[in-house]
Image (cartoon, rainbow, N blue to C red):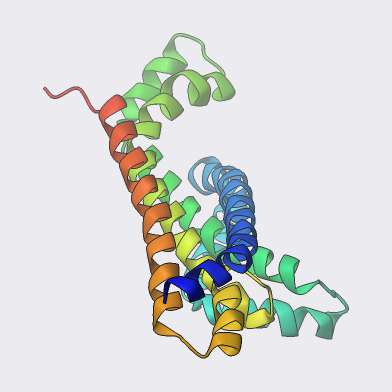
Length: 216
């Protein structure tokens, strides 16, 4: 068993690097897109709000696996051809963006309206109200669900193996195909995913303590 694990480590390391790269791209891209769309959902004109709402509800209602296959196999039908890696990243990013939109909507919506009205009363512009009043308070409420969403992104990245991308999961399956010993490698893979997500959970707790609410 130990020999099999030692043999597998170089392959798993390469796959793990791909898993981290996919996860990082999805987290960063979905954060940027989700914040922009979330602001549009809360503060935009009616057509923008409806468009973002339809996007968010539709994407969140589709299983991730179906979304991945739709992007990879469906987009070529309309002339858009993506490599399997970028098709997987796009599908996961769309799904996580829809979630970030809801995280931001809930966080901003929890801020008392009087805060924004007071900021307007002292002459702050819309951008200044967001930057100095709304976002600093909403960040505390946004952070816990977003960190939880990051761990979901890491776990969800395992689905990219279905498109032939050699991530950690695919690397494990390839090694199993050579050694015919599944259980030790699946246990090792589970431990790697657990270690990453447990580290993220610890970081989440630290950040929550750092930005904890002032109890009244």
